Image 1 (cartoon, rainbow, N blue to C red):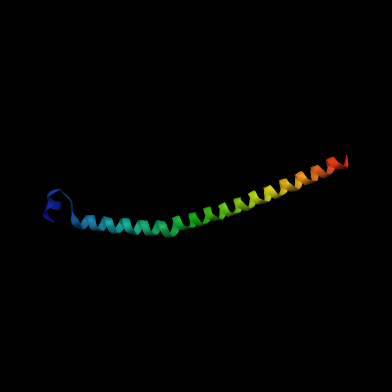
Image 2 (tube, rainbow, N blue to C red; image 1 turned 30 degrees about the vertical axis):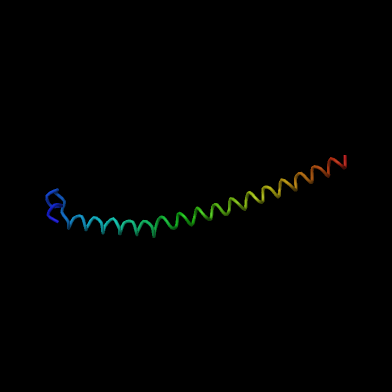
Length: 72
């Protein structure tokens, strides 16, 4: 470990920084990343449902238009 000291690296500080980084990573994952991912998945699901409804309404519209054309 002397070679780290020769390079100006304090091993205690390095360990503390690694622990702090790990803690920060865990906190961000738990309180930020997971809720954002859940929200994105929810929004994607809602978007897919809206697209399905749009297609169904377009089909109904086309059917209605065809019926009205036949009546005229």
